[in-house]
Length: 163
Image (cartoon, rainbow, N blue to C red):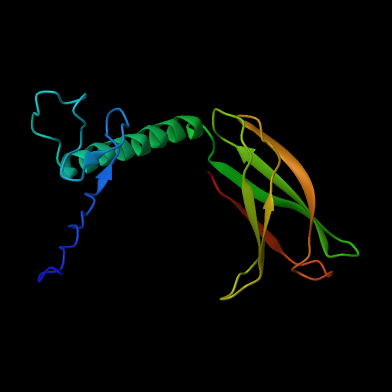
């Protein structure tokens, strides 16, 4: 004897999406909750996504402020720097330029100087050189070779900037 109705298929169970607890990391917390039963035994209202993202944003902003204050404190007292060309001598690769750099600040610091041809026109050639460490309230001279101005001596000017 054959049954007239075929057997019913077993119902398919769909798994509920879960994630770890935001406090202890325990797996299996439903997607609509943030804390597990152990961290929230009284089933108090869960923190919202806006609250969680707000806490993260405040942390990021606080970190940026701390870095800005620390950077400002580290850079305070350096410069301003005054630069001038003390001499220009032709060499095989270009021009040997002697630069005099004065640090008018209260901390020793290094700077960069932009060497330009004078009078400078629009699109004039320039080259940036790194100055060595200049002690506070003192002047140093150093010589460097610049290659962008050819090998014939030209009138140059140095602009040294503060960090």
